[in-house]
Image (cartoon, rainbow, N blue to C red):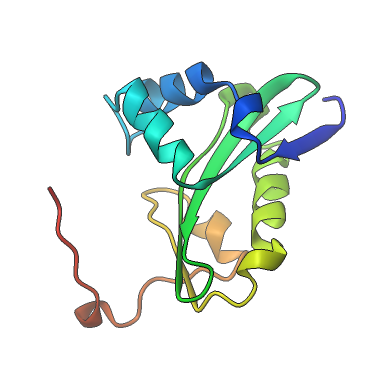
Length: 135
């Protein structure tokens, strides 16, 4: 790996890579249309990890900067997994000055609970207070 860097500039991100990963490889966004990926990126803080000029990871965060933030669409491409890229990305996101005072940061995962626990995430202890509407 060359020196890794993170960008939050959507214009620099490989939207085709993000779309292909989300719509074809992820378990949470299978079939998501490219137009939907673009809209979701335009309405979030997006993070891309680059190895040189190649994008190798992505995440996005939706927040009001006070009450709530939701972390989603986090991925590292297969050949870079287990090499510290995910930790590099999460360290960056969790240390953003603009979200240090946010009351609650949420995420959903089927298989990475141990990874996110290192960043202070826990299972929701009072699920009866949370509600959702799924379309």
